[in-house]
Amino acid sequence: MTDNEAIEFFGAERFSNYTGYASSFRFVGNHVDEKTVDFMGRRTTRIIAIDALCNPKFRQYRPECLLRETNKAFCGFFDQSKRHLYLEMFQVEAFCRDKDGQDVELSNRAGSVEMEKPPSTEGLDDGASAATLINKSHIEQSRQAKDLQNDIGIVTGNWGCGAFGGDPELKATIQWLAASQASRPFILYCTFGEEALRNLEQVTQWILSHEWTVGDLWNILSEYTSQRLKGETDAGFFTWLLPSMTTCC
Image (cartoon, helix red, strand yellow):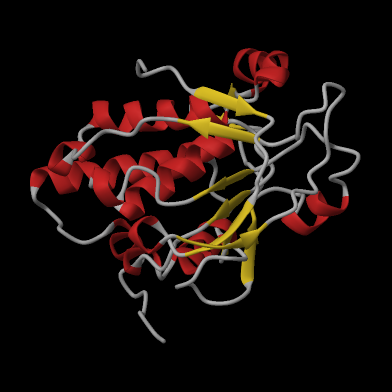
């Protein structure tokens, strides 16, 4: 795929229950998929394929790589059925100029970020914790799911990490930015026990409490990656962002 392409698989049906991840992946029984179907008899499930940079090492902090990964994630999270809404957002509602000439973002806060253990995946804490970034929480979205079949969120994990060698904190933030810009109502983020993401909830709560926009977080992330490239810091993004953050439990 090119840098602005993604693949969408529509109608996938799940047949198996499982445990583990990658080399620990194991089949543990049959699964009956109760997802609703559309007028063509297809399950209303969408799977997105987006290719991350492979083994990017230090270059993942370069501006062009940061932008490439954010654009790639956005292409995957972009809802083609709502293209007209994106056009309106970018052309009319995305930004306005205040009296000092500063960009003030109007409508780019997106859904909620959750950390959650997939029902059949081991290695994460039980339960989920949600952080609302706009007016609708994940719980509210779930209650409205039957009436808002097209208003769907993103279920994702450590995209571009693992065998691809990406920075988990960087990739998690990039996906949040992309989903927000794509106006997705929530992200359900599966950390799969990744140690670097143990403070993901604390960081998202802090950002939300300060009511940052997509532009705010992008600027801060850009400043962090600039410092990494200059050798001014070797801390992970979360620690750099919140120096006083404790790593309890």
